[in-house]
Image (cartoon, rainbow, N blue to C red; front, side):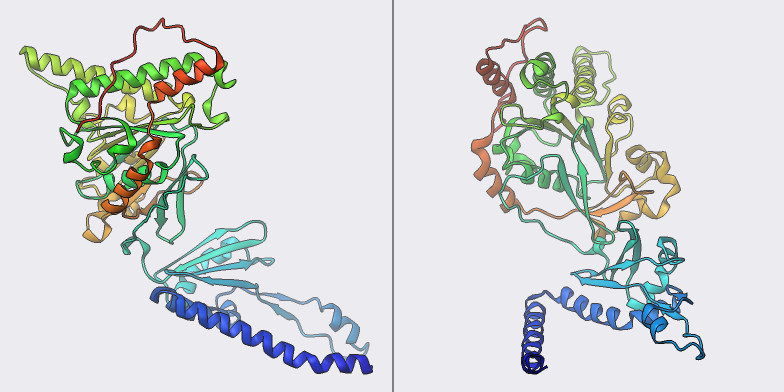
Length: 470
């Protein structure tokens, strides 16, 4: 007993010191946080303190008539029965810039459905603009409450300049609950991006280039239908990191597409011998076999139909028809050999991007649109059943940079706030990674030479190289 009393004399100072350290750490976090996070930290305190009472009023508790172990031990045989216990789910609250993330446990008769039914009551009590409830594993749910709307809060992205740890992961931005939205690029042959001018299409692709540029296992080519030279357009700061670039010249674009189709044919013929697999994604991209990305901006420039009887119009019409056939080859046959096509257009209707190309692309994003027909062309006919998520509702200037897409595993459509990358950051990344630029065809030649294999050139000569437009 004396030893216990001796240890007890140290308990109060130790407890006091631990509480002091915790308070100091909390104050430091509060001072260093931005304004929005500070408000959320105060909100998190109110959520914790008011949870027991709120849960009872919202019907998120359950009455347990079976006495606990201690009540059974202490209860007397002739005494009254122990009172029923009211069980309240335990929660953990984490604040961030936009609101709070509450992780809660479920109880018998208080599961995911009950939490979802109470979402609007929780939003009012926590002073949030919206609350979502999603499963968080067996017996758990995650409740996301946002105080400010992430879709109208413009965000920036500063590229780190470091190679991505996962080349199959494309981080698009955050959804309406400020949760990160990522899509997998593995086994994806094509992506379509639609939206009115200035709605955020090119900025999203710029972020893609900046994030993947530090990896030598990714090589990028671009055909920009808005300009004649790279220096005139949105990719002027990024062209140093592209192994090929052409403007709106149909002959140059045709040569680039032929060049990539020839690469696709060579890869298809050698992939088993060189990589030992039928699908490049089974082993992943590498500097010797890089993921080859073709960006076609203002895609309608290269696919439009020319009508006329004069010789020049017929020649241009034949070129655009061949362009469509070549890009169709890349989209339909390039997936397994590591070729990805990103098509950008204001409207992805059939006259802008042929349906035999558009409908093969599994990922479709749409920024603001003026008509429902344009939204349907970009996202599919099901968008008519989700009017609140339609890109037609994004025409307000506050929604510049907000896109809509169908996410796998989620019902309906997801609205995404994409971050802005400044021209200075884009130029910095392109300059720092320019030495990583390489022609995938030359990489394949070097790989074949190192393995002692040759390519049986029975498909005809490769397309002529397309120089970078200055």
